[in-house]
Image (cartoon, rainbow, N blue to C red):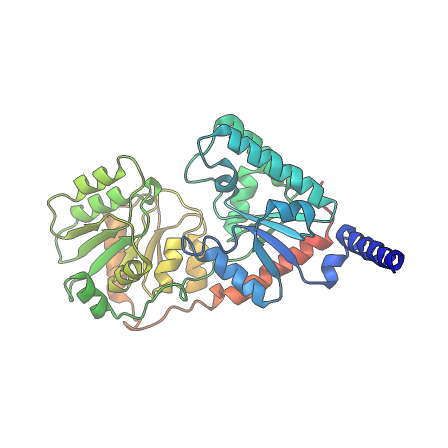
Length: 384
């Protein structure tokens, strides 16, 4: 009885081991994905949770990255988003070193079981530098030497990645768009209802800039160019929490003494964010540099037209959503760009209660496209 049980156990272990070491296994069974992050950031940014919820509905097992599972369990794909945030955050260098050493050591073990590493490059470069130059260079080398594929949110993103990371020339690249936020906020308030809630003039034309405020978003310039315009009754609202440093003071000084400008420089709840968007006539995002813009997608998700520079993936976003919803300007943001957008707003033939066509940004289609990327990468040999 004991001997037979032992033989049965050994047989199960051998079968399990063959499954762990077989690269063919992933093609015939449920895919297992460790994502960093997957669901744990759903309240900070719904992007990942939306993607992986849709992927789960397609039968994929997705979990937030566990280094223990990476070391001990069968994992088909490790999918990284914002890896510099994962590995380089914090001021204690020994922790950064430990993260890099242990993750890539565990990944090497996981590779014996066929694990692949994929990076969705939301931005070519980070908005903030993290770590020391040595640590950043070491991190970059470890990441790029171990990648099996990159995913970008636009064709232009692939071009920018190839330009900024020439060492990835042999690594396959795929494009899946950024999904919409229509299901993540309550956009049911009408323009009039939102304005009543916010205490705004119900009839004035309102331009807004909404969301976390960082230097590259160019908010002080927006205020200055708005103040340069003749007073035609248009109002400007800036709502969001400024990054640390002098930015808050710069914005307050730029807006001082102008009754047409309303500032709400604080953290915005989802409800408050939705109200500001629904109250607006035009969302203006005068980035000084940008690759992809969740804020622009948030604006059209609220069925509000948006003005953005013709940089990064903004041209592709305009093509996907349509020229009635995304207006582009060339060069530096100036009064002419703002005046042109307001004139365009007056000429639009879109009904006040119209909805933007976001069918190209549906999460179920994006999830299926991402799963196809996984399977293609798992079938292919590793980049040399």
